[in-house]
Image 1 (spheres, rainbow, N blue to C red):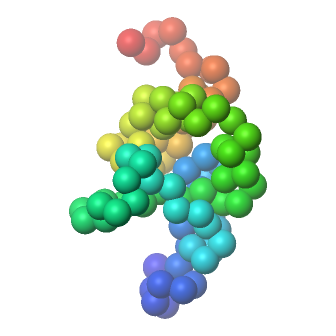
Image 2: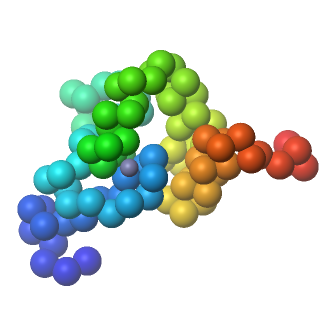
Length: 95
Ligand SMILES: [Zn+2]
């Protein structure tokens, strides 16, 4: 993007798809292992979503993210999938 110096970079919240400044985002590692950073792209959450997640049973989100293909699909595809699953609007034709 523009002026990619790390500080002003924007990241996309994996839960709601909003673009937030990286400095305002919370890193979310779906693998739950923050120490192994090699070859890994961290997911990011905006503050409201991060707060929401803390109020939810974490396992549910993990399952949702995994099933949505977090880290395995294009972001767009993932977000669409995630939205479907999160809202329970999954079509029965799939799978
Ligand atoms: Zn969000």
